[in-house]
Length: 427
Image 1 (cartoon, rainbow, N blue to C red):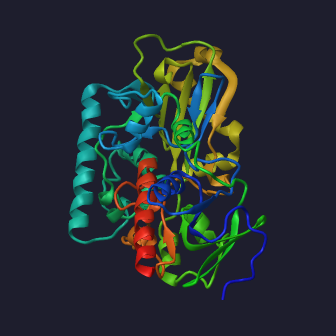
Image 2: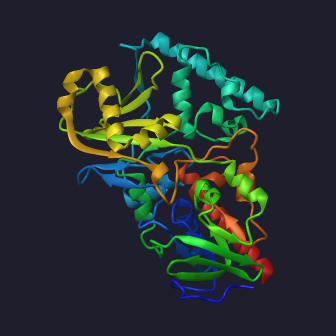
Image 3: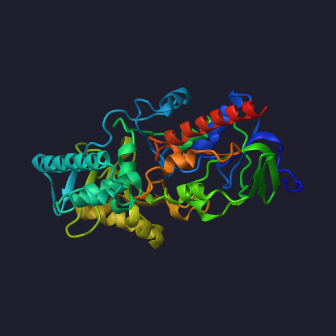
């Protein structure tokens, strides 16, 4: 039996109640409208967008705290959306740069050594996957090379977790065309503009879901919303945390799927500049490899010709840096820049900075998902409906475009297609 109705948030008895207004929830809402399904969209935070969130240093100088690149841009649906709304983005090679190791810039010959190591590692991962070995990536790559820390660092940027925490199966499943176009006007801003007309109830965390063949009731502090189906688009860390209680409980296989796809950590650290200290010949970015065991850092220098710099960290190091606080993150970036470009660069640092902190966001609890070793089928299980009543979407459910905004976007549409089929079958 359904629980007695409480005060209804805004709409009741809809075709689908959607929980979470990130890219997946928003695309699901848009798809529901197109397919003639009624919906109610509930968002725990005071804004839409989830991990796509744009702030500004000053007006006209946007800074993405989360999603920034239209990955696999050659097939990314957000390219057409950006064009429709006149959002600017950079084509070409935004990743072109050079490497500062110890106390000097590496030669092209040395960079070729790193490229050869990367190719060897990729071959080793593919071979292990072909043998059916679901090991941690760290178990099959070359960890002895002097350039191994460089590749390990870049791995964390793509997965938000370290090599010993990520399944080989996940590493080979990711589809990436290698075409990455960053949005000058902000990915979070683009998503917000595209979804501006979608009705959303904000500041409304769902705390409990009662469900059965008769339908669902999503309980919030403002009352309950009832519907025929429920679409959950919250992060895996939120789902695994138990912050949303399910009655009856989710089956063990669904809980295991969420636990097997934990979110890692990722930081974008930005410092606004008072002027250009690098000169016209500077490459778009540099990766700094300090001597010893310190973690490398990639810095983007004046992206789009704007006066700011961005440092990227991920994995355990990013988690520790976030725990140390925003000032520690800004100091870390500033010191790495000074060691690379000299003390004179300090004169270009303004007092304005922006730093992401996704681990401590209470409605997300991390960056993006990575399958742990021993859980190669977690994404498939996470995406699978429960008794054609509870449906799931989000980047973690994408079989090949996980860890991306467009993967989340596509998953929301796919989930609505499944819901539409289930409602027609039940009618």
